[in-house]
Image (tube, rainbow, N blue to C red):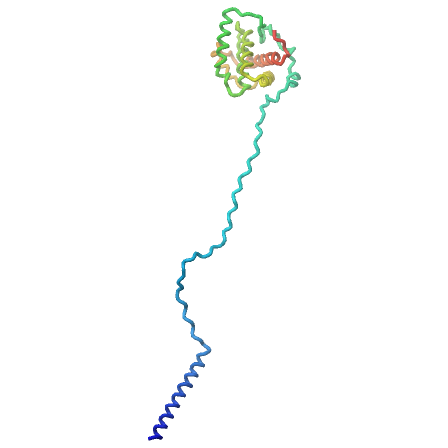
Length: 238
């Protein structure tokens, strides 16, 4: 009984050792191939915006450099000098004031009443005559000079008196320095500007200009020179 039991226990012990041994072998065999770790589960974290790449600030817009102020071009007539006038105009060679071409009455000449009435109306009409209010100062003066020039072409009874009336009006409405330069410019460029004012002569009591304007322009140039001579003292007022 005892022997049988001892043998039985010995067999059980041996089986146990075999199991342990086999288990060890199995462990050693698996030692070079370690089991893969289970992938981590989702991580719970506060929502944090990913750090963005640093933003390079856009360069501040540079204000455009102001353009240098443009120097306004000076009208050619403004460059006229007294030296130029004396070099270009021989006032002694201008037609006589008492002749039939571009006459100018003496200050002591007295017109008859009918002529005087016409002159009064003309003087008043000059104040509101539309061609006398154009923007260009040279054209404005040129328009006024068409008035005595037209009266001269028509040989009106008022022709010799109108230049002084127009001259007085110009001196009241145009700065003297400008008037000197403009009168010279017209005398030297009688063909310049336009002659639209000739269509509005009836507003100052004159007939419409006859034919082409060339003769009126020519005489306006002579009147410009004669009035200029008086203005700068090259012609004595009579």
